[in-house]
Image (cartoon, rainbow, N blue to C red; front, side, top):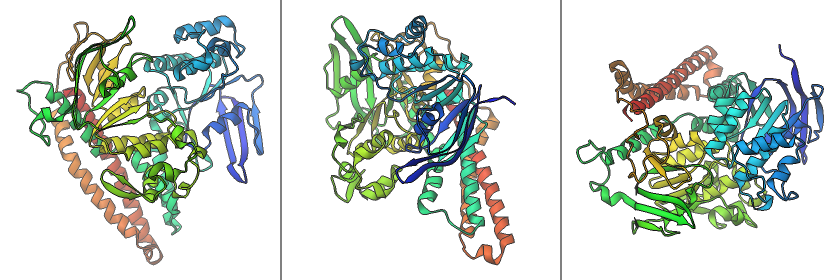
Length: 592
C-alpha cells in the first residue's frame, strides 16, 4: 500500500452558526489523480484551502508527509500588486529559467501589464507560477477557465507526464476523463470516494443515489421534498437523454442534407422552402484591422435550428465573428444578409446587472410571474427549474456564489423572447449539473444558437456545426460536434472560403470510406426504442405498487420482491439506453 502524503481526519468547519463540513475525512497518496466533484456552493474550493493549509478549520486534524510541497491554483488569483504578468509568475519562488520555459510553451507575454491582461492571459500566468514551483501535490481550481483548446491540450499533456499528486475541480468533462483515476464527491456536507476516474462518476453517483432511495423505502419514509428533487431530478438530467441526442443527430443530418445538393434525400421540415429558414447569409466576408486580417473570405449560411460552435485560439476572432454576424461591425469586404425577423438575445454573463437587486427583481422585475416560451411561469417554479431553492427569491443577487450568479443570469436570458441565442463561454464557473441543465435548454430551444466555447464535451453534446478559426483569418466549417471535426483532421485554413456545411477533406487529409452498421447492429438499433418504452412502462407499474403506503406493512415479502424486480428493470433499462446511445453514435460516425 502506498504511504499517504496528506490526511484529513474528522474535519469540521463552521460558516456562521452552521457547519459546512462535519466529520470529513480524506487521505491522498503521492500518485492519486482525483476529480473533486460537487454542486456550486458545496464547498469544493474551501476544501482545497483546507488541504493546502491556508484555511483554519474548527475541529479535526490535518497531517502531511515531511517536506510536502503543495501548489494551489486559485480560480481568480490576486494580481493587482504586480506590474506585469511576469512579475506575478516569478513571485512564486521558482527558478527564472523554469518560469520562462513554461511561459514560452504556453505562449505567454511576460511583459503584459497585469491590470489589463485578459482572463486567458491571467490564467496562463497563474499556471506558470504554480507549475514552475514543481509541487508534490497540485490543487487545481477550474484550471481550464478562459483557456483555449490549444492551451488546455498542452496542460493535459503536461499533467499526464508529471509525477505529482493531483486534485482538480473542473467542469471540463474531457479534461477530467483524460487525467483522473479517483473521484471525490462532496454532497450535502459528506465526502464520498470512489476508485474510478471521472469517466465512471455518473454510474457510481447514480448507484449511490439509488441506494439512498432504497434505504428510505425500506424504512417506510420519504426523502424530504428538496432532497428528493435534488437526487432524482438532477440524476435524471445527468443521464444521457435519448430524445435529446436523437434530436441533435437529426439536426446534424438535416444540415448535411442541405449542402449535398438537390438530388440528396432530405429530412422533412416545417417549411418546404429552405430559403425561408435562412437567418444570416454571409458571402465572402473579410474583416481587417490595420495590417491584421481576422476573417478572410468566409461564407457562412446560418439557418433556423442550427447550433453552431465557434472554436479557436484566444484572439483568433471568435467574438469578432459573432459581432459581424449580428451586424455590430461591418465587413471590410463581402456581404451579409439578415432576415427581417431576426431577434437575438446575447448571454454574456456580465454581472453588473445584479448589483443592488434581489433574485426576484433580476428574474421578474420584482413580480410573481414571467413569460417563458409563450407560457406564464411563477418565478418560484422557474427558479427550481434552474436548481435554486425558492427560499432565495428575495435574497440579494450579489450574495450568491459566482457560479450561482452565472446560473441566475442564464435563467433570466433564457426567458427572453428570441429566435437567435448567442452564448460566449457559457460554461465558465458552472457546475456539471448546471451544464446538464443548459444542454437541456438548448436542446429544447426552437431557435438558432451561436456558441463560443472551449469545452469539447459540451460542444459534442449540443452543436450541429463547428466553425474552427485559426487566428490568421481562416476558418474551417464542418457539420457535427467537436470530436467529428477533430477526427477529420482537416487543418484549419485548408478550406478557405468554403461554404457552410461542406465537409470535403483537404488534399492533405485522409479520406474516410463511408460504411454502414452491420445488419445485426442496425436491427438492434431499430428494436431498442420499443424495448426501452416497454421497460419504462414496467418500471412505472412497479413504482406505482411501491407507492402504496400499506404494502410494506401488510406484505413485506411482496414489497421486497417488487423492489428487487424494480431494481433489475432499472438496470436493464439503463443498459438498453446506453446500448442505444452507443449504436446511434456509431451510426452517425459511420455515415458522417
